[in-house]
Length: 235
Length: 81
Image (cartoon, rainbow over all chains, first blue to last red; front, side, top):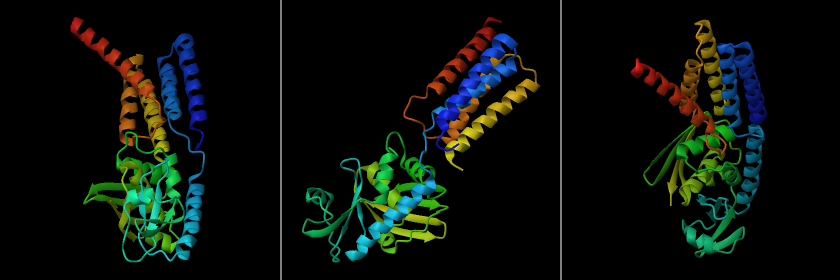
C-alpha cells in the first residue's frame, strides 16, 4: 500500500459513496448505509495521508552512500573536529568543519560571509564546507510548520527514513538531548561518525538546525547497540 | 509498522467493528453510527497524530459538524419532552 494512499483512498471513498447511496435509497438498510459512510471516512482519511514514493530502504542506502562520499573527503583533509550544522540559507542545511586542530571555530556569520567553496577560510580559520546527506531529506520533509521538535524528528527518522523505531527529544542545557531506539543502520564511515555524528544523529542535527534556525553541533553521542543518545548543542 | 499504516488500520478496524456491533444490536438510526464514527476518527487521530497533506482537515470538520447537529437534535428532543 506504500506510495498509493491516494488511489487506495479514492477507490474506497467512491465505493463507500456508492454503497451508502444504494443502501439508503434502494435497500433502505441502515447498517449498509453506515458501512458505506465508514468506507467514505476511511477513504478520505487515506487520501489525506502523504505519499512515500521512494522505498525507505532505498533512502537509507542513499544516505549511507552519501556518508561514504563525505568520509573520503574527511579522510583527505584529516578532519578531527566536530562539524557545525548551519540553519538553511537557501532551504538547505550546510555544515562546516574547522580544518585547524587548535579548537578555534568561526562564528556562523563569519562562515556565511566567507566565499562559498568546499575549502575556504572564515574568521581566519580554514574550514571544510559540506552538504550533509540529511540536508536534502530534511528539506524534502518540509519540517517546521506546526510541529514540535520531537514530532519533526520522529517523522524524519521513523516515518520517512525508518532509521530507528522511536525518537524522544528533550530541550535543556543549551541544546537538545535526542534518544533513538531501535536504530537500524550502522554508520560504516568512522570519521564521518566522529565528526558529523552517525547517520541518524546527523539527520537529527540537520532537522534541529532547520527547526531552531540556529547553528548546532554534536556535543556527545553514545550508542548502546540499537539505542543511541545524542546531545546536540545550540550555538 | 509505519505510523500512517497503523493509523489507517486502527481506524478501519474501529469503524468496521462498530458497524458490525451496531448491526448485530439491530440499531436502526444512522446518527448513532455517525456519532461513534466521529468519536473513533478523532480518538484515532489523537492517538496516532498522523502527518497529513498540507490541507485543512475538512473530513474532521464535517464529522464534527454532523456530530454537533445530532447532539443538538437530541438535546432539543430531551428539552421539548
